[in-house]
Structures are given as structure tokens and as C-alpha cells.
Amino acid sequence: MDEGADAMHTVDGKVIIVTGAGRGVGLGIARHLGRGGAKVVIAEWNPERLDAAVPELRALGVDVMGVRTDIMQRDEIDAMVAATISRFGTVDGLVNNAQTFRPMAPMATVSHDDLDVFYRSGVGGTLAAMQAVYPTMAAQGWGRIVNFASSMGITGGRGFGAYNASKEAVRALTRTAAREWAADGIVVNCIAPAAADHHGDAAKETEGYRTFVENCPMGRQGDPETDIGPIAWFLCSDACRYLTGHTFMADGGAFMWA
Ligand SMILES: NC(=O)c1ccc[n+]([C@@H]2O[C@H](COP(=O)([O-])OP(=O)(O)OC[C@H]3O[C@@H](n4cnc5c(N)ncnc54)[C@H](O)[C@@H]3O)[C@@H](O)[C@H]2O)c1
Image (cartoon, rainbow, N blue to C red; front, side, top):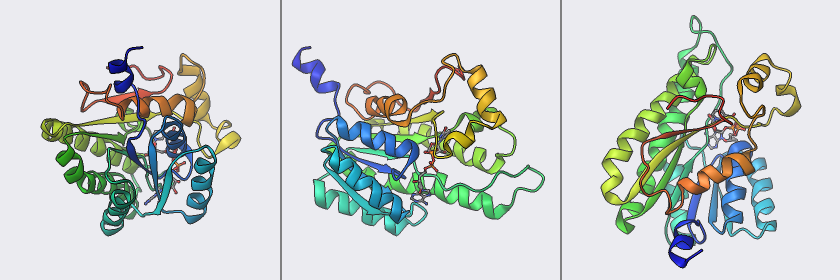
């Protein structure tokens, strides 16, 4: 491979924040980006998960920093971004993966308190983190932002009304930021993953899991590190230079909608 192509197809040396990287999809992405040479900041509110994830990445040889951050608190996001810049000198990428969950509820009874939590974490946290990194990315004329949507939101999955509303609002923010910030050299995209999650084997007993696997051409859920990680890696690299405002269904072909 010649040097020009090499330089585009890499995240080596990039400073990338991954929110909610204490477990699940975020942790898998953080591992993959870190193995690719990125300097990784884990912004996670759960101290036990943070305390486990940071040494795990360090043991892989990743230059990593953990910052305890509740993405529902704007001042904590600002402090986390400031700590990132203080430690690594800049911020090149932001993976807005964190989402606070509430139990499923039918539309007839879904509470406004739950709607508020989904919105403050999903939409509010995503917007606040984008706003916090924007000045630095715009000043350097280069930035990569990866937000998180869900096929649930796109299809209107039953029992997930508040979650679905929040995830679709994240896609709306993504498109607007993509239009407004393209001139600053910042591209903004979404991943809608279908990934093996923290529920482990118990989740495989559910009807939702069986239906997914039956309908998925690849017949399995994704692995956070090896299936979802490379998609985030591409979206954070210079190779992703002519794609913005899109949602990528990282789901083994389960949901083909574009
Ligand atoms: N797993 C899937 O199949 C799937 C499907 C569709 C969308 N998603 C989206 O992918 C993302 C990750 O999902 P997951 O399954 O890995 O979730 P998860 O619950 O396993 O992990 C979420 C992480 O975010 C952290 N977090 C939660 N609220 C936070 C807050 N307020 N501040 C900081 N950290 C917080 C949690 O502690 C946890 O470590 C989410 O945005 C989710 O909506 C996942």
C-alpha cells in the first residue's frame, strides 16, 4: 500500500473520546480503536466499569485515560473534554455511545420521567458532547463524530416508545450537524448496531433475539469489538471524508433500508 492510502486508512495517533465505554458496544469500540493506535478517552459514569475498562485497555498497550462523566451533566462533559485536551493536546473523534436505559413500557403508560431520562442522556448528552468538542475540531479543520441510533427507532419497536423517540432525535441532530459542520472539516454519522450485549446468554432466550437471528442473513448478533469496532474505526478515520449525515445499520444485513 502506498503512503497516501496508508495515511487515510488509520486512526493511529488520533485522540478519540468514547462515551459509555465501560462495557458493551462502547468498550468493544474503544478496544478496536485503541488497538489501531488511537489515544482513547473513556467517558463513563459507572466507577466500577471505568475502573475495569481502563487497565484492560492499558494492558493491550493502549494510551488510555478514563474520566468519570455523567453525560446528562453538561459541566461534566465540558470537564471531560478539557481533561482530554489537557492530556492529549486535542480531540479528533467523539463516539457518542452512552445511553441511559429505562424499563420497557407500552405507549399507553410510558412515563414522562422515563422519556426525560432517555432524552437527557440520548439526545441531550449527544448534543452537549458535540457542542463541547466542536470548537477544537473546527479550529483544526478536522473532526469525526459517531452517534448512536437504533433499528428499534427506525421500525418503531413495541414497548420502546421513549427510547425510539430519543434515538430518532439523535439521527435528526446528526443530519443537522453534518450540514452545518461539513465546512469545518467535521463529518458526523450514526451507527445503528445489533450487538451482543451485557445480558449475555439470558438475552438469547428472548423472542426478540430469536426473531432477530431468524431475520439476519448472517444469523448472529454482532461482536462489539470485531463487528461494530471496525465500522466506528472507519467513521473516525480520514478515509471517511465523503460520507456525512448517514446512519449505518451494523446488523449483519438484518435491516436493509437504504
Ligand atoms: N446493543 C445493541 O444491540 C444496540 C442496539 C441498538 C442501539 N444500541 C445503542 O448502542 C449504544 C450502546 O449500547 P449497549 O448495548 O452497549 O449499552 P450498555 O448498557 O451495555 O452500555 C452502555 C454504557 O453506557 C454507560 N452509561 C449509561 N448512562 C450513562 C451516562 N448518563 N453517562 C455516562 N455513561 C453512561 C453505562 O454505564 C454502560 O457502560 C447505545 O447508544 C444504544 O442505544 C445498541
